[in-house]
Amino acid sequence: MQIVTTHKNTDFDALASVIAATLIYPNAVAVIPRSINPNVKSFVSIHKDVLKLREPDDIPIEDVDGIVIVDVNSWGRIERFGKISRKEGLEVILWDHHPIEGDIQPTWKCQEEMGANITLMIRKLRDMAVRLTPIQATLFLTGLYEDTGNLMFPSCKAEDAFAAGFLLEQKADLTVLGSFLRPAYGERQKNILFEMLQNAERLRFNGYSVSVNKLDIQGHVDSLAVVVRMYREILNVDAAFGIFSERERGRCIVIGRSNVDGLNMGTIMNSMGGGGHPGAGSAMLKSVNPEAVEAMLLELIQGNQQASVQISDLMSFPVITMSSDTTMEDAAHILREKGCTGIPVVDDGKLVGMISRRDFRKVKGPSRMKSPVKAFMSTHVLTIDPGKSPMQAARLMVKHDVGRLPVVQNDSIIGIITRSDAMVYFYDILPD
Ligand SMILES: [Mn+2]
Image 1 (cartoon, rainbow, N blue to C red):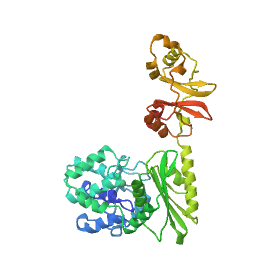
Image 2 (tube, rainbow, N blue to C red):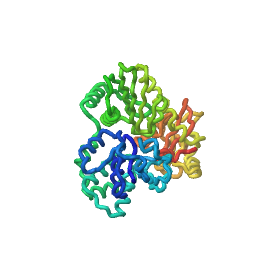
Image 3 (cartoon, rainbow, N blue to C red):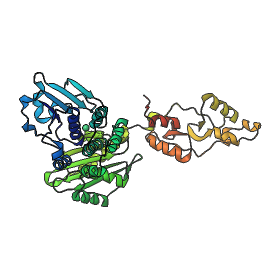
Image 4 (cartoon, rainbow, N blue to C red):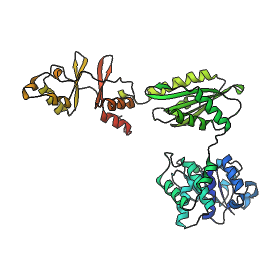
């Protein structure tokens, strides 16, 4: 007997992959773990008659001589059938889209990084020219949307989007999909969000807008991450944190969502004993009061800032400068020779102006080229301090239409940052 199975806490991508496998391997029996996600559970209970799923306990393990494992690559995550991993002569087929190598050594596999596992299986179904029923197409698209965040997660590949198009052609029903995929946002979550919005505050940290919100909650509340995500979106801040205090259990749940690279939720939550990735993270803290958690969090946000890239990491130095007595003729020569479009003018270690190619348009007649740069330089020079972020430098340059900013510390010029330095940063080619 050949069976198809998947990971516990089965999500839509896993269920879709199991059903797709029964189309690829028509003799295989679909077996779903006992623990499945609540949304998937309601889908399964409504579609029981068409899905032909078997319970793990119905399957005598000694009869299994082949297993198709989908959307997971570790034996530990497939509940009861983990035990047959060492069975003699067992044929193991693996379909998995996770980037991390697991402990399953398959006889045959299709393992490739993809936004959703179902995308890999759709590739095969299309090759086989299998016709899908609208229910199958709907289930597959639900899995695809769930695992790719409606095609918006960075892990989503072009092939995922093409597969979504194919499923829509096969009459996947978006209304049905929407009703099963709806985030678990109910009355309690709505009340919590409402309360958070009433005492919302926005702070600024080194150019980023941040909101930290403390709230007491009674008993366990599901889907607080959804609430924090919505809170961040409504406030339109770069990062938002919810500190949810369950006083009767003496613990705090901290959830963070970030929309910017400079504030890494994974790093911040790690320092609080939790974890996550750059965009989302959480931590659970025992026997602490929410005020202490807030103070700790604010400190970590600051620290996280300092660890991120600053102007001082990107600026060029030493800086070519000239004194205000330099003649325009010499200045033109220096600009040409150094290939710069502008040079800071410094007298006695103090920045007094900036001379740029533009200023030469003010020079009327060749004799004026003997005049000193102080007659033509701009004296209102915008500067930036070395601790600021590349984003702040970029904003200043755009706002004032300048191509470079001298970096000034304690009144002396220690470097210069140009548009191209900022571009290097934004396109992720960080200097060593
Ligand atoms: Mn998946």
